[in-house]
Amino acid sequence: MNKLLLTFCLFLSLPVMAHHSFPAQYDINQPVNLAGTVTEVQWTNPHIFIMMDVTDETSGDTVNWTLELGGPNALLRLGWKRDSLKIGDHITVDGSLARDGSPLVNATSIIQTATGRKMLAGSSRDQTPQ
Image 1 (cartoon, rainbow, N blue to C red):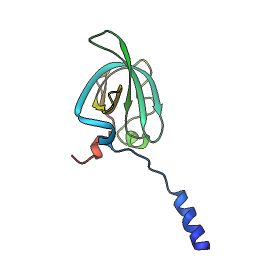
Image 2: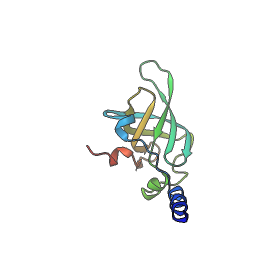
Image 3: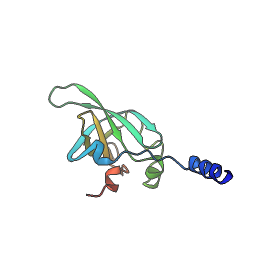
Image 4: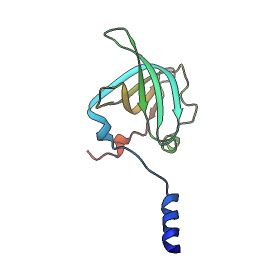
């Protein structure tokens, strides 16, 4: 009984990895390039999310897009810092659109307009077999 209880406790102590697969949510055949202004940065596990306002070229309306990036540790290894992007920064993003048509992108890279600095986004696309 003690071994069973110990095994159960060890199982509960393992980190939970509740990740979705890239192809389940995003379409690699729908690449997108967006330019706009950062409105929010959520530096959280398991993914970092950046919200940005983009002006629709056709209607002139502003659409708030959500960018999904890799996790904090992955981005730190790619040279990111918590303050790499700030509200008000102008950026250009490459990525893949969400399958459901929502303004959601799995970002692959982000370019800071002011500096021209290109940052990789730690996309889950990069771990998906093609």
